[in-house]
Image 1 (cartoon, one colour):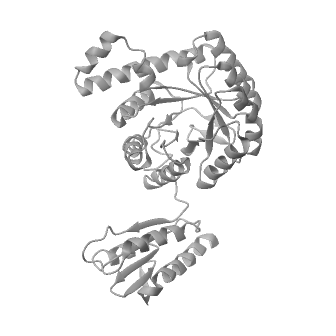
Image 2: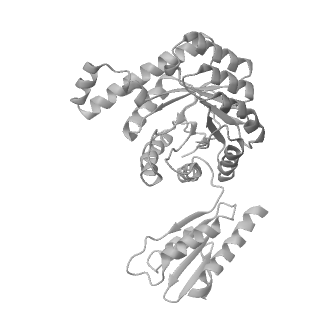
Image 3: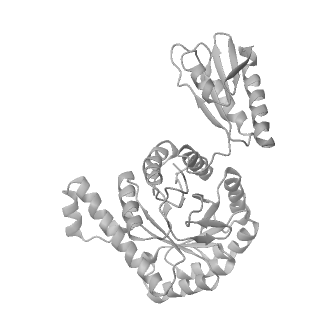
Length: 373
């Protein structure tokens, strides 16, 4: 798909140096899990996330000591910092004063309209956008017992449809608060841990609003299962042109969120690849080399290359030559030896003991070609 040609048109929202919506490239976000008031630990994680390719980092600010530390975090961060605020509107105002590039706000847990108005005014004064949204959990918590009992007996599709209606109504009520104060510098989100519900909710939101959308599956779980859950929802939405920024959320090291988000956007051709792509055969009884450790070694060694080269590591002659034609660099292994291909042409045959070094040498050469372009 073409990132620019098929995406749903949305308003442009500027978050520090990063544009969201308005035809800008889909941006990658993550969130720190360090105590925000620990400036050194938080900045260390922010830098790890940025090095992995994260473009926006969110930090939680539940206490005054967190917003007191925020100015130093903002000053030391290589990417815009977003303050995550719940319940206490004063934390949002303090975050704006500390230099946060964006506020994540849940109007549903700040009951006083005057407090929300103060946050809006503070953000307008400093041109700080606000992300507002709803989660399935926050909507469910507000349902009455009679409705909850009826939904337990409903068909699953009817249940999802009703939840989408609740989420959309809740989000619309939040948006009206901002629009009534002529504040339109907002990003919307409508998350669930149910992939199908997430798809339905974001499609409904995209039809009703032209604000940019922050995609995510909330509480997705550990990386092993959360990856599948997140990709199931987010890839569907992205291929339908929905989504302007995203976070893949794991109960894991947040750097993994960034790595997988990049690969998702590259795989869908939503963003041009900037790092190597590694493909490898899944192995079978035809393979006559110990391929899996070889693939892992190649993956680790490719981490030092910053060029969009396609590398194939194949274990037999069935798929190997065909993949070699499509790859920039390919290794087709046989018993005790391997053929090295560059741009579809066989360049050399090496013994098994030399095949890793030979492959990486070819990769370095092709990477230099990209640098010379």
